[in-house]
Length: 196
Ligand SMILES: *[C@@H]1O[C@H](CO)[C@@H](O)[C@H](O)[C@H]1NC(C)=O
Ligand SMILES: *[C@@H]1O[C@H](CO)[C@@H](O)[C@H](O)[C@H]1NC(C)=O
Image 1 (cartoon, rainbow, N blue to C red):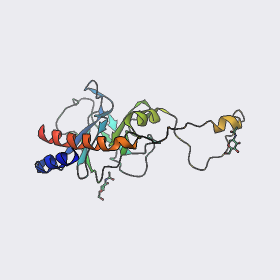
Image 2 (image 1 turned 180 degrees about the horizontal axis):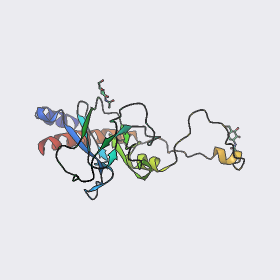
Image 3 (image 1 turned 45 degrees about the vertical axis):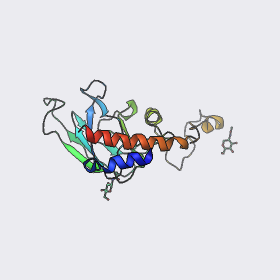
Image 4 (image 1 turned 90 degrees about the vertical axis):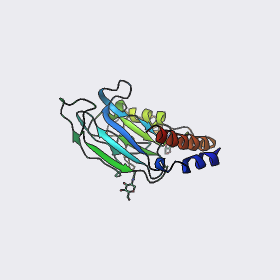
């Protein structure tokens, strides 16, 4: 299966550097101006590009991390892009920013300027079984994680027991699913190329 996928991909060289266009400030369920990214999950291959298309209001696409979805990690930052309210969600010439995907490691983004990360304005790139887009979105809904050197809260209302009661994550035990995820990715790229 894996080999036939590779063979098919090699027969379609134009599909090898696929451009994923992701709307920012566009609701993926309604297709109108709104919260988040459209689509909010993509599976690019190494060498593909992501083009963020700013479709409404004031938004930015900023790279973050799986555990801390709403805090920039110092990586990619599109900058803030403003779109006049008078423009339609699919108006020509809206601002775009492109970033190249260099490998198939997961990448995580949020809309910093839009300010609605906690409500799900996040983008998952190449999520895995263990680090899924669903858990990423759940992480985004949580309060931000404190910085690494934490001191005891000034408020005396928290007990030692409560301080240890931190959010834990299930063990990453589903690595057997990675291979099938890879196949789905390859198929997606080929299909995406066919239907461009
Ligand atoms: C991929 O590499 C290019 C060139 O070094 C860099 O500009 C870009 O930010 C990288 N992409 C990501 C997602 O880190
Ligand atoms: C909380 O964590 C500290 C340090 O890890 C440990 O010494 C303490 O026993 C823990 N307290 C409870 C109630 O689990």
